[in-house]
Image 1 (cartoon, helix red, strand yellow):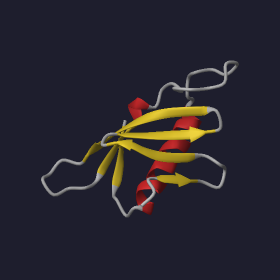
Image 2: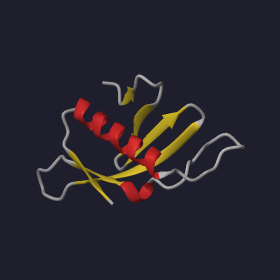
Image 3: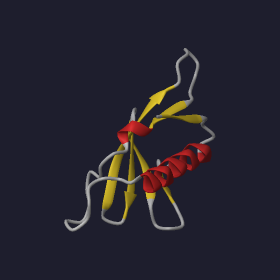
Image 4: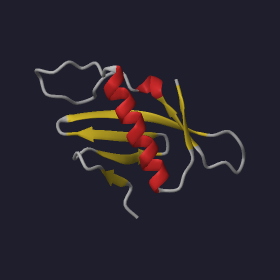
Length: 93
């Protein structure tokens, strides 16, 4: 099973470890923290929007800050990512 999902615009999301996803778009990348929903048998995820602040990699001439529009786009794609694996998720700001 592949843990990377590609989107029509060329961006992708990849599962890195238990609590981390990586969003990639061209030369840009950001690591996004995700947590498990509380509960012994819960397999839902919580997307920690507060972890989407600065690009981890980017072209030299670009700003490192991620604006609110791009942040929302990244969150929407993470939700699509989890939906493709039939996992529930919610966003925590």
